Length: 229
Image (cartoon, rainbow, N blue to C red):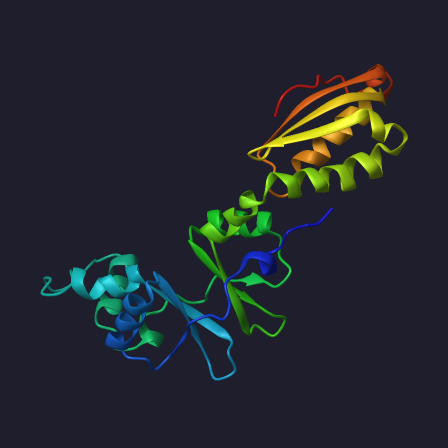
């Protein structure tokens, strides 16, 4: 079963800026390319930060603002500093949150969520930029054609794990929803087939309608019921 990784869905090549890039040049770059953020790289293409629209908007937000208060918080002071920043190196958020090449899309999604970022520069083992992956890129896996999903279910699940009864099991796919029908030897086989099918990239859900000859839940001590995912 293919484990989809950021390398499969990332965008490349990546538009970048150097630390010395002036504020106006970064604004022009984002607007001209319809980007919401851009990685900042050094001379060796290593990612050292990211400049986003939010970073750039500080200059507008604090334009003509009153002088800083004596006990102003750290976050507020940082925002004021960015408002006066003249270059990408001063504007950027650093260190950048990045994804390593080979990272699974599930791990990338968790990282985006935990760090509250919308995109991840993808770097190699030396920290050099090779691509960028966004939230929308991670969703590309759910655009797989139903025929592709059905083929992977049949090849990787039915024939590999249910070889003895492969001719008795059928997988139907409609808009990413997989319905498994047929008969297998035992409950645990049906359970494994359902769980593994849910892990296939592009599968939205699984309707498990497999019947079985022998219920081995008591022997396995599982004590759980099958249903619809």
